Image 1: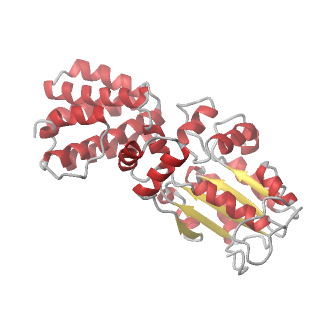
Image 2: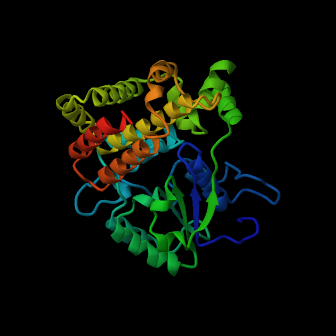
Image 3: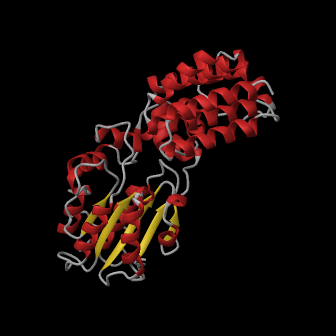
Length: 356
């Protein structure tokens, strides 16, 4: 696109988490601004002033936009520039959980606020300083407030001649449809198992057998693969909480299930949603075990020990309804419904489903 001078005014790199989309977007913008490359080069030179500015995250014609937590009435991304540089430097694969930690608020739901939209429009109105084209590099546009989306829509519909948007999304279906329809989209696929294994042996120094096992469990997500190198306390906690739900539901211990619901709600909205997604995965894995399809399971050793005994309880009569129950819970919590009430509803319904 750059070499043929056929750049769109708005580009979207979309795909699942852990696929290096943001690294690709940053490399693309640096290549676009590079002044030292010559015909035939397949990458930016890395030496010119523009490249050095990109490496320092201070190129004057590159505007970063990303979800943040509320900080006064005029919250914009620049207020979190230090945390953002740390994220890009230390966690370039852009695991959202790491961003929540850097924001020092793991229970928050960061957003791109309407004030950010106004600030971007103000900047795009200015003349480019060091290049022919100004670029807004936006991470997770699906987290724009509706009011912000409407502001950005106007610029996407009627773009400035010397500017473009480069957006990076984990969940493109959540982007405002009128914006999404105007983006030129590039799908970034999951990594293959061999690519993940090669990364783990080459970059993380683990042996080939362990790398192969982790690559199978990670489902093409490098963030997940790195996490699985050592199963952390959170993963063990989630397995214990899933096991407790199923055991208490089978025994129909409603009082204990009420306490369990409060424990899940105490994780915070974002972590509760991640836990429910984890529950969905274990339900699917248990169903696969139950129907004896060899070679399709992706379980850690601890999960496998539990699932071998539990899998008979997940069958063709209840698997779809259980997964749908968790789907509804994720939607409700995402819509700011009281997490404790949502999880208690899940627990009570599970009492009926687990004995189907």
